[in-house]
Image (cartoon, rainbow, N blue to C red; front, side, top):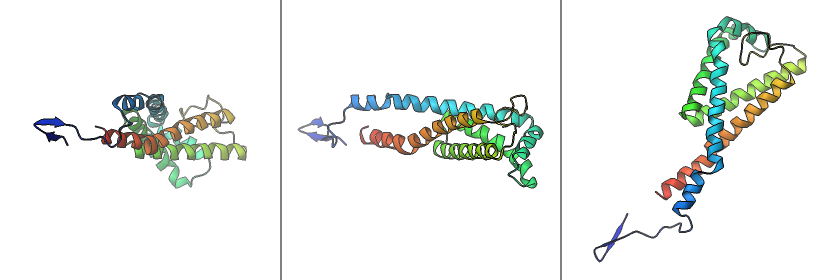
Amino acid sequence: MPVYQFNKRVEPMNKHKHITTSAKQRILSSPYIWAYHLCRLLLGLVFVYASYDKILQPHAFAVSVFNYLVLPDGLVNLVALTLPWLELLLGLCLIFGVWLPGATVTATGLLVIFLGLLAFNDIRGLDIHCGCFSTETTEGPAGLGTILRDIGFLAVSLYLLLFVFVFRRRTEKFSQLHS
């Protein structure tokens, strides 16, 4: 709130003199912000792409879900019908920057589950098709390459999670203090 002194407007003392407008611009244009947006778009596109074939071919995806042999038969169809739509919603939320706290938590949780299921079936020695991006079995069985790919996706998701819950909140507080 401005203070008036002898009919002149005088700006109040800034509590944080050491932080200038150029410092704010440096924070907002830092490589971390750019990496955040790139990771958000990348992971969003991955989830949208992963949902496409599963939505178009729910029966084939149900077979992929069944082949993991971890769900009771009654839940296979429910998962096969709802998971692709959840992936589509998560992907769109990440791409458009909507509901990011919930989207990043859910995406990270799903990736942990997917990674755990892949590793579990690899340890059990089951040669099953992943069903991650396609319902076709032409890719071959899921293996170490699929697990490493999902570890990469999980790393991107963890970066987004940390950014949304730690760094972004600090940036927002900074912006509120100095605007």
